[in-house]
Structure formats: C-alpha cells, structure tokens
Amino acid sequence: MGLLVWVMVAIALWHFTVFLPDRWWAGIVGAFAGSVVGSVIFGLIIHTGTIPGQNDTDFLTALESVPGAVLGMAAVWFLGIRTEERERLHHGHA
Image (cartoon, rainbow, N blue to C red; front, side):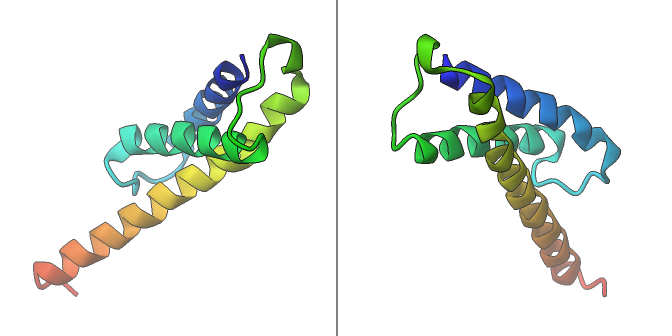
C-alpha cells in the first residue's frame, strides 16, 4: 500500500511540471518517470528496502515521497539541460 501512496503523490506533484519550461530529458514523459522513480527509490531507502503494508501506511507515508519525487524531477531537468547544451555545441551554435 505504501508503494501505491508513493506513486500517487509523485504523479500529483508531476502535474505541476506544466508550469515550468519544457527542458526535461525526454520531455514531459521524462519528468513523469523521474518523479515516480525518484519517489519509489526514496521511499525504499527510508524504509530500508521494504514497502509499508496497509496497516503501516499513513499521512507520513505520503510526505516521505515528496523529496524523492522532487529529486527525481530535478535530476531529469538537469539531464535535459545538459543534453540541450551538448546538442547546441555539437551543431556549432554558441
């Protein structure tokens, strides 16, 4: 149940990426993947590789996924910026 909560919170946060410029690696789908993967990895790290069950899932479980989702989206954002700059330099545009 904890995994479901992590993924749902990540998707909810991902919706706010429409307010940012599209510099994500792989576009908006990359932002989605970064959010979900980051949230799940962060949740697993916090819980030392286990997923909270139904009785162990509470509001704190939802809050635990926020930093992971944000870090995952940040990683995809910076990867996208880096890829754009590399392509610009490769094509000779300064």
